[in-house]
Length: 288
Length: 162
Image 1 (cartoon, each protein chain N blue to C red):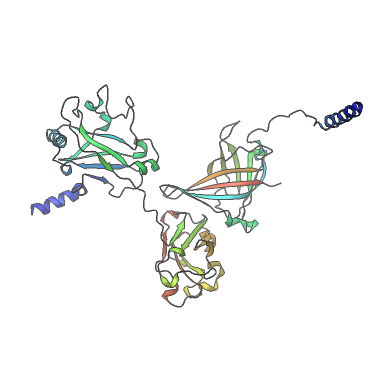
Image 2 (cartoon, chains in turn yellow, orange):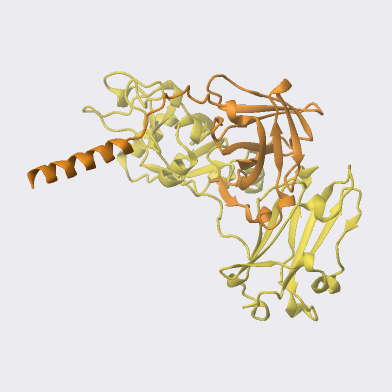
């Protein structure tokens, strides 16, 4: 019963992810270094066979404040307002700006927006990740025993860049933007749709408007008879359809698209073998 | 013989001096930005997808190349600093049908503001400060969705309509 209560408590406080791993984050899936990030460190997951780690945990148990000490993606030089430490013995005098927040026993956090904090671009954060350690204000040294965590890394990676077989560009658009849907036939895994010939690639398009009306230039079985629905061969095994949604669907002033749907198919559609497996769906909530 | 050679040399020298170009007086420099007046037709358009962590750019000029009616033509007038969309083409109608315009700073503008006739203000970084002898001109337009996020940049390049 106690375990269940503890589990619920942890879920409620949001610290469940901190268990099992030394470093976690909020949000858990973090891919944009220009967005706020909370780095969470669980001291109990550190290697407690190390004296300097045991010293750090003892300091935390004694109620001392803990600080991050960071050197990647960028380390500010001595004297800079964001330098890790102050004065002639910086390791013994951490910068108050880097003080961590105690979230629970043994669990500490530091919040930042990486591109702003480190004053670097997103690409640098992706390349270097965030490297840091945790220490009390006085990290020892200079003849005293060290008091610190091991070196820690919080990896920041871009979202998966692999595009699906059918994708769009740009990834977000207003209905009067020039918009393209691309079919990467070279990466098609469905055998019956592989090596599709130029002139044989079409797309069924359908717009669901905010008032629930569905607008489509052709029915599913008439797509191959509508030249406006042909996807152009752009080489490299790819086909594309470029259009401006509000013109393509002949929308009247005030009409707004809610959902755009596309299904890539062959000119002659007879069975499910003649179309891709997954519909292209674009939620255009922000288009309205 | 010597006189003959001398005569030939003198004749060549006279010919060469006759070919020397006449140096005219160099006039005043073309002022930056002063060449914007007149009509411009779109020649190249790129989209920059700002919704991706590392923005991706694609040239969409081929969308216009097949049909002149798809190309936007914009005209800038000196009088009242008016602009008009002579031909909207197949581009977002963010500039409306016309309005007024102004550079941000003179004499070296870096951006142009469009004040559309329906009350919108669009500020666009310039690709260049067109001088009277320039035949190319460009500016960027960024678009925001209704959630307020800037998601897309159009990079417009124009040729002067002669």
